[in-house]
Length: 264
Image (cartoon, rainbow, N blue to C red):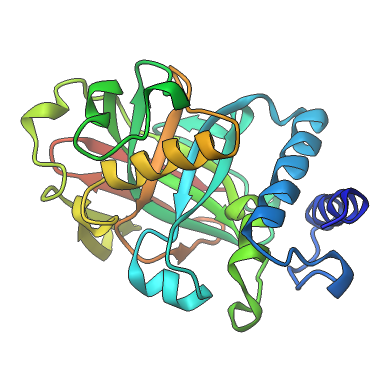
């Protein structure tokens, strides 16, 4: 994909989001033909958001961590997106419905890294990467798919749009997470006090550290790395739900507490 097309694709996605336009496939000449091109568009889009005041990259999200979601968009691996500092909220948080085109939420286990994960120490796997995890917590990922028609969605389109990340809400950190079986811990999503979905930590590729290791390796392959202090959202254990003004949503994970979001 030519540099001029990468730049034009990123600028169109940036402008459409800022204007509140519904998500649609990119024009054929700007559509990434593969994941390599899609990440090139994503990198440029991230730079545009940072230039616009979104702040530095404070962490990352891992999407498509279940086979059902991978099959939906026709890929056999997860994908990543950056989380910007100005979009990280602490529990309990409030956001305005008018700041989003189509606000969705996901219930997740997040981790905060205690050290850098450079390529020289990799490749990483689920069993060894826990040494780099300083804390775990319940978290809510905010997603804004701009009401995209999923029948038209492809993995490169999702990646190009920074995997639809619109921020996150982080619950209190738990540093004694090693006492928990993170694959087995139950979690749930509540909206206005009613349970609307349940899962376990292992619903994200079998263990929350599996997507974490995948992300570390994927960033290394692309010339980057996870850094100490960054937060990683490891994938939803409950299907995405969509919120409206007045809704109150909670992510609860046994042993890791909760994160709460109110939409005004």
